[in-house]
Length: 140
Image (cartoon, rainbow, N blue to C red; front, top):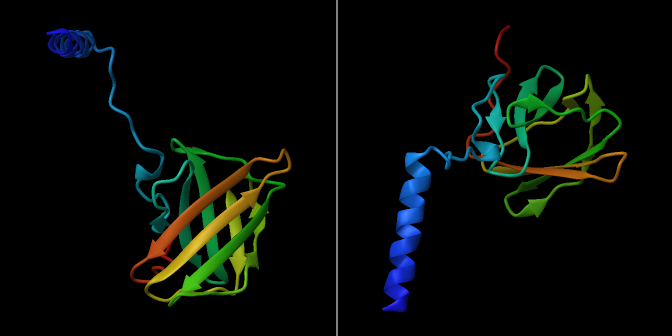
């Protein structure tokens, strides 16, 4: 009887909260749509968009759709290709929310992992599963 009462009370509390609009849907960090024609990372804390450029690859960093300042950070990208981890690549943090990696290309099936060590000690990480490689840069 006690178990049934607790379950009933919990259901009533949830129904009341929903009716008053106290419960809002949650938007996951990694569910944002690409803004630059690239590939979004898998659901991680931060949102990363990987975009092909004529000279390599650019990654844009955001949190809930707002740009994140990564200037001064130390970005490193590792690629896993056919089960083999390739040598880590160091990137350059540019213009606050952008990171460039020069002379890099991807193949279908690659997994790319980004890690950014910030000057304050914070670490941002993201993971991309590139089922079809990275789309070519789109014309602006």
